[in-house]
Each structure stands twice: as C-alpha cells, then as structure tokens.
Length: 239
Image (cartoon, rainbow, N blue to C red; front, side, top):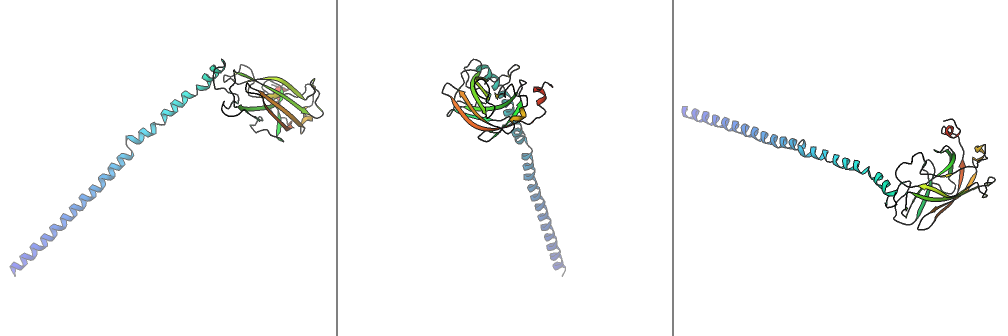
C-alpha cells in the first residue's frame, strides 16, 4: 500500500509538471504573435509612408515653375515667334474656330441675351468675349470686324447701329498698360441719351475674325439687355 501511494503521488506530480510546460509554451506563442503585430505597426508608421507624403511636394514646386510659362509665351508672342498666346486663343490644331460669350461667360447663340456693361475704358458697350483657334497668330495683335443692326437705330454713317473694321484685339500674355483686352466691343450710338430704350431689342450681329488661313465668320441674333448695375457709375462719370 505504501508503494502504491508513492506511485500515485509521483504520477500526480508528473501531470502537474506537464501542465506547467503547456502554460509556458502558450505564453511563448502569445509573445510570438505580438512580435509580428509590432513589426506591422512599425511598417505603418515607418519612413516609407513619410516619404510618399513628401513626394507630392516635388511636383508642386515643379508646378510653381510652370507659372512662369505665360510670361515666357508673352515674351515670344511680342516677336511673333511663339506658338502660345492668350486672350482666348485655343491653339493651332484643328479647323478654324470662333465662339462668342457674354460678360458672364455664357455662350452667345441665336436668341441669347447680350447685356450692356460699363467697360474698363469708361464707355458703355455690349461686350463680345471670343475664343478661337485653328491658326497661329503672327504677332500679339489680331483683327476683328463687326457690324450690328437694330431695327429703328441703324443710323451711323455706314447705315448700321454699330460697325467697325478692323478692330484690334490683343492676344499677347503680358498685361496691357492701361488698355482693355479680351473683349470685342459693340458701342451703342453716341446720340442715344437713354440707353434703356434698347432693352429687349434684337440685334443682328455679323462678326468676322481675320486670319492668315482665311476669315472666320459668325452671324447671330441676340436680345439686348440694358439693366443698370453698380458698375455704371464709372461710365456715368461717378467714379
């Protein structure tokens, strides 16, 4: 009986020792699982993502350099040797093209409204804002021709409401010194004291852009709008 008791006690001690070994191995596995997690966290916050964050900064500084391009283009344009211009020029590729817009950048087509505005030159005008392309200007200036007819008001010396040929238009990229650029003006009659009589009248526009490749012509009927706004004070001598 004493020997049997010793055997049973030894068996119990052996089982207890084996259980302690399992616990030790489990802790070791847990520690191993923690290490990969730690390495992953190091990767997420390491140098590589920081570098990728800095990388977009380089194109930005390169982009800052590209802001000098219009200045270079303008310098070349004044000599007539550049293939880049401003003032609505869309490039030399494709067919000859001309589009017209109002002061709010709305396209002008048949039936569009054309608002009266106080121009930067201090004169009231119906402004035509063009975009054009399919040719390369030979210098910083190109030429338009415009006639406008309004029933009952075609009383200028040529028998139109307004007519001019040529109208110089600046396509250089350097700002004009005191000039007005980017617009082809249609000036109302000088002898019209009350411009509001034109409100709602229809005008037949004939616009021609002269190019070395040929004339580009646009004909359209627009509805004149004469609505006073705060800019009128300048043209009325109010500053």
